[in-house]
Amino acid sequence: MSYYQQQHGTSSGSRTTARRNFEFGRTYVVRPKGKHQATIIWLHGLGDNGSSISQLMESLPLLNVKWICPTAPIRPVALLGGFPCTAWFDRGEISEGETDDWEGLDASAAHIANLLSTEPADVKLGIGGFSMGAATAIYSATCFALGKYGNGSPYTVNLRAVVGLSGWLPGARVLQNKIERSNEAVRRAASLPILLCHGNCDDVVPYNDGEKSSTYLSSSGFRCVAFKSYDGLGHFTVPREMSDVCSWVSARLGLDGSRS
Image 1 (cartoon, one colour):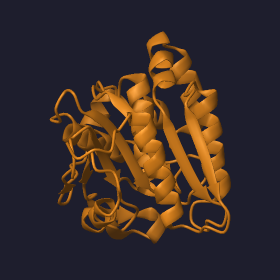
Image 2 (tube, rainbow, N blue to C red):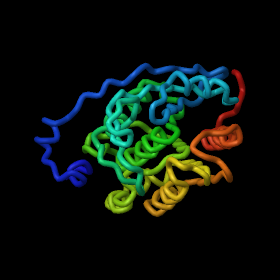
Image 3 (cartoon, rainbow, N blue to C red):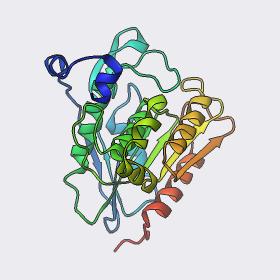
Image 4 (cartoon, rainbow, N blue to C red):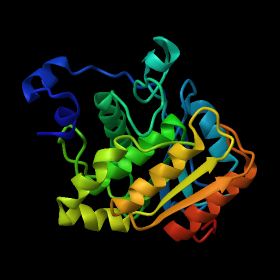
């Protein structure tokens, strides 16, 4: 039985029949200013788009990174009373790593992996994001470790780094048991560095959710999890946080910072 079935009690037949089609928006690309050593997909938060994110990524001093900034599908969001906006998956009230929309998460994770699948073989691959984008990035990390999406389809992208800002871990409570069942999943989890950053004044995704996500990941076998907290920071990013992200990415991916 798949992860999706465990959460919903559906059969594979009914899951296939009920599968939705998701129409993703425009993808924006920021080309590297130097030698192309890494490609990182960066995922926006609820209601945002890839265009605004690409402008932020373009300002970062990572010369050897190609940034891919996709736009989520427009869909009704339960948290907003059913109001439609860009969202990587549907979401009700935020509570400790819980979500109902596993199908939406799988669709977004697959779309992201597909964007990375055509990158050159010698380029290191990563995923990062903010808020709901962070949750989707972290979910992708669990798919990488397990070698499959929640619906059982193979996850084939070789991730080298994951970053989540002001986010949370979907499916936190069941992750440890799933990874412990497979030696390969344990090995893959241990190999993937993850950086989580969270402001202690976040009034949208509570700081405790971010901190607990770090704990869940570490206890599930992700041995290279770094958690950075920021005093006075709400649900937004600041230059100091992005500077820490750049330093961490550069160190973890071994970027040399040169233009050639």
